[in-house]
Image 1 (cartoon, rainbow, N blue to C red):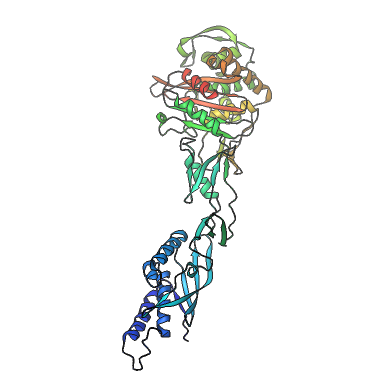
Image 2 (image 1 turned 30 degrees about the vertical axis):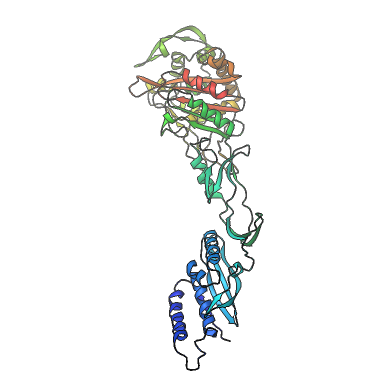
Length: 521
């Protein structure tokens, strides 16, 4: 009996080749006693086992198979194991005793550690050669022809589900892939990144039976903590996407649940290109009259019932403010001026307010708030104190330096709907960081805003939504560039869904109202 011990992996293969060559020279040389080079010598058995383990360790399944008595079966199984486990083992020859050998096997499993166990094999004589008797147990004591060794990842099943548990992304080859690429296409990459960052990346090895039963051989084998849950609603998202797709110009929509701050939907159509409703800033036009009215009411300059003039134009300092299309009304209550979007009324009321009044009102409606939401970048808007009388009246009608995103205006609508500061979130279980907080207007002002926003739909500029249920809102158009074109807005809420719609270059708020109606249907 002879005894050898080798560690066969990496650089050990080169040393092994020298040893094997020496053994083969001894086999092929004439023996003085006619025995030392015989087929049955201990040195031949050692050499076969050593060469087999070395080839297996090196991933050379063809050579390893050729050293067995069933080359085709051996190669097929070794290839399967190598493919499933993705790594090659390190082997240690422990002992050759008679026609049997024992050895150690170690697999360095990424994400799990080193999996080690003892193995054994037997040798058979074929003509003048010794060969490893092939059986899958040579690879692992429990492996059979109809079983498989498989490396599993705890990243399995669903990666992200919506608020109702509907899968949005599933794990495929350890990567999150969309179930339906048409659902929330703007957010799917962000959802996937967050899922990848937060999932348990551990791995484990299982023995799989033909019926699919799995036995964990190495690693904890525990299922992951489950998919991440986003606040998105597949139903609301589908409605939002269908609504913007129905528009004849670039369109965007953001929907937020006022009671929770949950982002329910973010959508834009193909024509919107690289625009982003979460952080792209635009002049809000008359939708900003929600903030202007807040400033006026809080200052006590007027109440919702105060009768104010609404001429077609008004001159304030060096700035001429017109109503859209030059309309005019006889003096009317503030709530009606709001419903009909009288620029001249609100410009006159604002001209006497402090320079910071509009910025302060915007603060209370969340426009200047700032949040870090895992996976996405948001910017609600930017409203600063006016530097001149002209800038003040321009800001009053949502032009000039006032800049707001669809996300920011959806947050504004949610604040009025909820009557409190809203912290937007995209995840259940992953917190939003509030960098700049805000406090909603007093309840008396909130109630006044609600009544005025309802009148916009029942008797004002958004009567196209009268058949869409109890909708509250505000329309707006905002010039851009050289002033020859304008974007159209509608922001509002119904029940526990607040939203903002923006159509780029529509030159009217009516298409935005139509998109809002399509969304609410």
